[in-house]
Image (cartoon, rainbow, N blue to C red; front, side, top):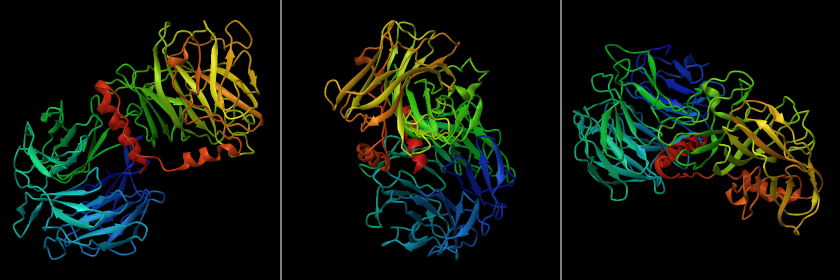
Length: 637
């Protein structure tokens, strides 16, 4: 960092950068860490006032609420705007000045601020709520059940907030009590007591809904069960007691506790399956306490600042072995949304939308779809780098599904909302085949009107359907290729099939195309267009390239009539099947051309807010898949 910092927060922004603000000796200086460059830079503007022991909360609108801090405590609060990199005061400050307090984002977008010491140095029971729409604070209906500072707050799956421990009184007496805040009534109620009193401890929500509590003067760790409202001791205890050591929930579901105590370089992992703690293979490069640690979208943990023998400006990165997110090998910032996961013999395949893309080996900011096969045991990418079009290093093992390779052009590209549901397994030639569909609103001067993509004269979104052959030698053409699609009515369509390299390099166009204009059987129903092996039209020819991954693509060019082709596959068996694949082994996927009024209902459904859901894969990678989806879906909250 450019500044030494102690007792400060670090906040992961929606674009993947990390904002660090204030801290002792940092004055008003704020900095941004870029995961792609691994560097810190000062924000365009500094904070309105210097702060330490304050809070920083990422809001749903992407701004960061910074509140309280200093000694004596202040009532002021300010907002950081990542677009302008500047800070501005909220319309009104907090009702009570605070430091050593907490701030928790609720599911309805408000922020709950609890406890802390007021400007007179007295620990308070007062709590208040910040409402982003009014940019103001207001006290809760009722205060906390007891005064607290140096406590923890945890948002539970049911939307309530769990307050644990802390201390109160002139001597800072440790508290073993806990309480719950109900956002529906804006009131607090007492909950169970811990085995021991704690302050400066950690409290981390686990995948199973329980809360891990550890640290402060004991190696005993506890679990809070929201169902019973009680605490119980874990089977194993910490390797060493710790204070002031942040904890981070990893994609694997484990928890890492980093440093702390009087300043140590040690770090240890909690395994929720065995309820045991163990040291990491190596500790930090520098002993730290009162530092910050956050999990970044690329799967790494940024550890920064704190105190050792003096205030620290250093930072270091921890890469969890076998616990990566899907883009970990690239180290590139990206906004991952709309994730889908599917089983693949123990190794999940994940498809997601991302705000980055590759043209050859050049990174761009296009919004496109990525796909990656991952090891169910280690979490690492499984597909090798491509061997055509130049040398590709590790970042390019994360597969970019570009949609702007057809018909050329250099405009603004977008593909997203992928649909994927399964793989065929290994074919006779060693190929693994994956099926998916995705939206395509390519808007280039070179794009053919009506072709899977958008012409310049319209803003309609069309969908391409693709299958992917992974690690193949040659694409199997021993049988016909068949396109299956559900049509609402007769219309004029031209259907092409293509073989493409994964990064967009065209290998071979179809040897011929086929037209479709009438429903057989009568619409609405499933329709087929067949490309006959050895006949006309025939499947594409695979004669070029030594590649690790290819995509087989179907394109629809609309010419007349009014037709809707299913994308969301609501009860319809729409898909592209190619090569030797039989329909029963195909992914159930849809292909859409939203060209005319019948698509209005679909478009309204697609524009509705995405639901928050966890998708569970089977066997050894179930927990890993859950963490991928949780992290990426919450990146857009």
